[in-house]
Image (cartoon, rainbow, N blue to C red; front, side):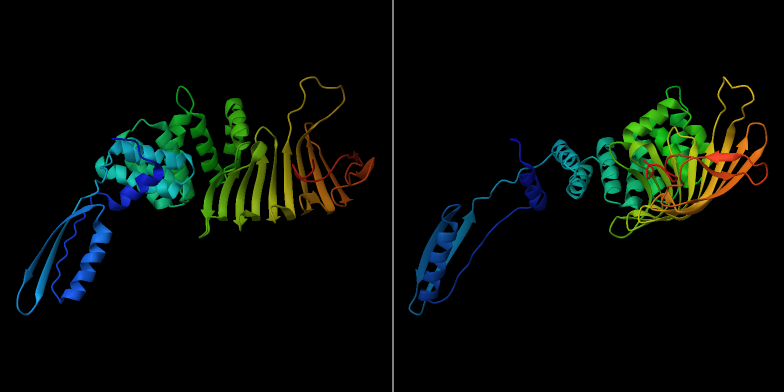
Length: 372
């Protein structure tokens, strides 16, 4: 059978397995029948053969026209035809048409893994989460050792609001002899959805996973969470952003809005606070943990835990900031000083209320990447 174009395939799906036949019978007065015969001849002369005979009587003339159409052959598409078509649609991002073709393929081979897997991912890409879960579960039953099906199903569980199931699928793949990095991302998102910050930081201590996430997030945002009726991020969600930033929190109309946690792969800080218009806006708290240098200067102490509490406008501190440093000596320093649009001034800005230690600052006060 010759290869058909996608549009030809689509037309065949509409008329698949249908048969066409035409039969015309006419019995009336001469004038009316002659007009009808003329029209029929014009319409069908290219594809029909007509046998016509006339029977005359004293009262009327009966004209009988028998039309025997030459049937146009309908291509009978195979499983491979439908699957190939579906994969082409999927690769082009036309998931609705891909779904139709995958379904037609599964009508022929109901338990084919490739068709089930592709259909499940297509449902996921069109935010039909319940159907995605059902189909990907079926695919995983067909091929129980498929890591790619498990990862796709993990994302579907995340989008349905079930991070526990997602983590249960991903963890064995991540903890295998050769860690599956994609499963590591699903595990990370599941931990984030449960807001297990310490476990997230522990997972991100793996250099291979951290590097993989930064590379993947440079291509496109990876989101798992609630959406509204038109597919926009709305409600609670987790997202990996460009350059390895991670957000855990509320969305509205596809942007960060509400309460959220912000961190970065490979960094040692976390911001928790209010968001609006896709940036920190309102009260927030910033935490930083440090490891003292191996080679220490004699008589010098180092801050191992820093806390900053302030109001933020478009990611920058604006107003009074409260700062505390826990030193590796066990001593705590506390300062309060004014910041305007992220700028506190040069040199010493405050003195510790308890011990009189001075604080000198530089650069912008706020949350990365807004301070860059």
